[in-house]
Length: 306
Ligand code: NAD
Image 1 (cartoon, protein in one colour):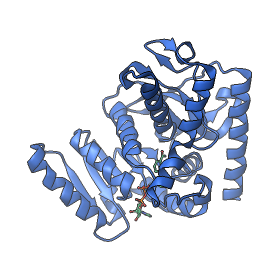
Image 2 (tube, rainbow, N blue to C red):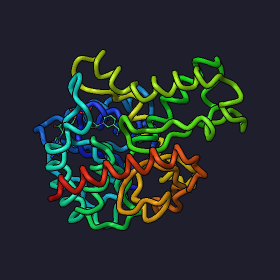
Image 3 (cartoon, rainbow, N blue to C red):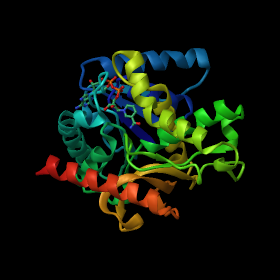
Image 4 (tube, helix red, strand yellow):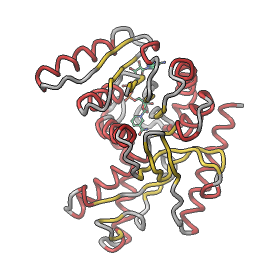
């Protein structure tokens, strides 16, 4: 399987490293900055001798290198500065996304596309429209990371391993995300049984704020170790056709009462992309919050494309 990562910055290069080292496919890394992707790929290639692996990695400053990819991951774009919202990145990253997706359509017409660039939900919608690919083939990595963050905070609070926790987050990859304690379970038992409402609310707040907290501590750029791990997890599900249920940003077509909006929901993923969108039985309050987020995304998307 040929997997291309567009953008050789923090997220893109660590993603390429994870994909190559896990032998998930022939990995190609591309960046517009001359020499950047090639230099990082040579460095990653040299690590093969130390690790005694023979993975395939190639870097280029030409988008032509993605030709014939089975899977393309878009990490090209600007990151948040301290105090900046994901939405402020919108206009600049929309331009990059459009250019990139035009090339994906031309060079890799059969590919699945994972969007990572922020603001994630809007960029996923734009990628779908620009490529014209079927909805099952284009989705975003956002709540995959948010669920990992929620799980990590629960694990630390309860002093239990992450492997025992199935965390559930739905909604946009941003302030409107909803970590759902009722659908988060530890070995099948709902989180509500383990922690007080007050403690759960504190963990939810910390999950929602985690990205901004990291941006503020770093001073420049945003998170990349956990994001690249979440991307690699999605790629593994696809490459190995695992058919696991995992949260991604998907185009809804009536599910949850939402149409024409890309937003985070649990989906069953496999080699052909999204195989099923899972509809959770949300409470009235959860559903209203999801609908409100979808309404905001629709408005923002309409003004972006007006
Ligand atoms: P970065 O600045 O380290 O890297 C971005 C790279 O994109 C740069 O090397 C830049 O040269 C390259 N680039 C810009 N335009 C390009 C183009 N047209 N073609 C090819 N490459 C191009 O940023 P990063 O930390 O890697 O983050 C990348 C994006 O991912 C940002 O938009 C960030 O907000 C987003 N992000 C999303 C999540 C998520 O959960 N969805 C998590 C972390 C970061």
